[in-house]
Length: 292
Image 1 (cartoon, rainbow, N blue to C red):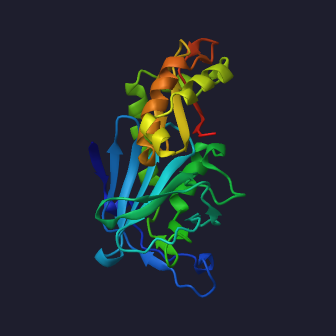
Image 2: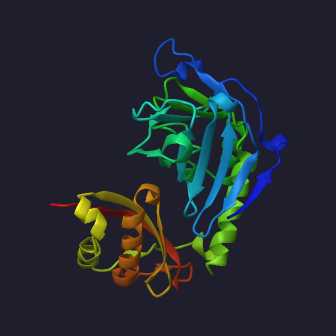
């Protein structure tokens, strides 16, 4: 794992949160200052911003990870100090309104680490807000700059506000990481940003049956089921070039089997570039393993 740090002075602003977002009337918000600079993780299949918040007895770890370019990321929040409530977390980037995290996954790790993760649009202003993919560069940069932090309701015993300060420098670094990662895969960023058609599945029903028939043996014996959020990079021949599983953290055996089966069976009409030429493109969907 290769990591780098973004200068703390660029991105740390100790600002107050909005008390109106408390999970219950009168519940105090636990405001946590940064305990480290942003760390940028260059993984083989993704890029992530990671940072610690709070003093030692209130420590919270925060991560935003992307597996493909765009407006969404996997947000992970965990603590070995705060008690996890296991209610559905509600997330807000401030200023903004909180919205419930769709289908959160709760995790328990080493050293009594407890938390959750799920898919978010980190720059959205809320359920009815404007997502980042609808913004031009100037509006996106303005939104990133105005953010003061992230508030997490319902996840812990009291609401938690992570005082990130402006997110612009951090998000710029994340975009640079994604650009370098995708370029390293042999993808032309200019063409990727000007596709006239995304990848389109061919005979999807047939190869979907093949994939779900490849059920991990141990999981089948244990009666475990899974719904995997999959992002594929499809090459100019319509084959799976790369496979990333958004929720692989808690479904490692399912993820390995699903990616191998997708590479073997999935076929696509490739994406088309601005001149109508077959090229690389991303495709996302869900693979559901269910014991009927």
